[in-house]
Length: 368
Image 1 (cartoon, one colour):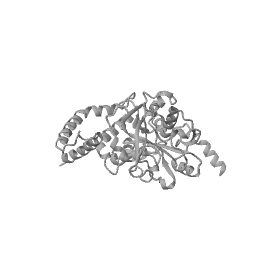
Image 2 (cartoon, rainbow, N blue to C red):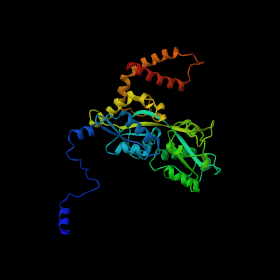
Image 3 (cartoon, rainbow, N blue to C red):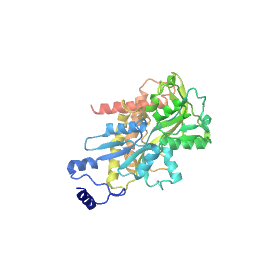
Image 4 (tube, rainbow, N blue to C red):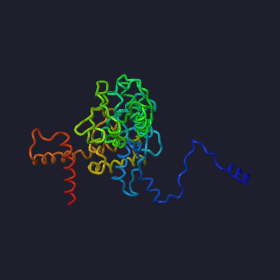
């Protein structure tokens, strides 16, 4: 028997790490339709904002076998750029906008100007700096020479935190682990701090309580950071167990952007991305309602990412809908004029919220 098995094994083609992955046989028309109408998006780990955003895309846009968004759990912004650039079957990904510039400068994965395009700016990601309340650490500068968790290897947090520390001249001892492990390490005194850069409220941070000995520190918006980062605020509404009512913590933020591989036009992969854009862009208002992640309210489809090319299909969609958007803005102005006057008019954030309510109201009336 052993001799027979050996002989049979010798007749099989050799298996190598670089060999092609065989296709599933006899897919039929249903299988062909499922495969041709599915697009994968690389996101983040289970405690990160990216995975929730990717799930929301799937929940809102999936249309049975006609169109499907397949969320893929990833390691975060840095690895996501690599995956969109190289990983077979991954056409879309979420990353931090400053990391595109990082890979462009370092050239560590080769030139990407003509390989990566962006679909849209999504939201801002805030820096969360957590220490033990009794540690005596009060600022980033106090972390010099201490062990600090920069989060998972390849994550956007790791690369952006390295960048921030380098710009500020702070030399800490970097360690890398998930946030759950980092919180345990903090309790034991094995590390001085853990950092996460993610859209608030971040799942892992919501679980923390000041009564358990944790504290979130402010991060100053110093001049060396102002070219690529933004000022931001964490509040008790974001983290009721960690921040006292009425209090707020100043921190930094960086933009999250949806990117795609730059497939040639008239290819199947380009068609999939185009189909995604055509499904996603008209439904932005749907993403800005409960139970979708609150960060969707920051999404701005028309925002430009300087130095990078937008996916051509997305650019064409925006141009074709520009006149429609202008007309809606005019109608919105008339809508505001009919409302009770407020001194100086609505604040920008209130105006954006009112506009989204107006769009929802308009679409509801159109269906009548």
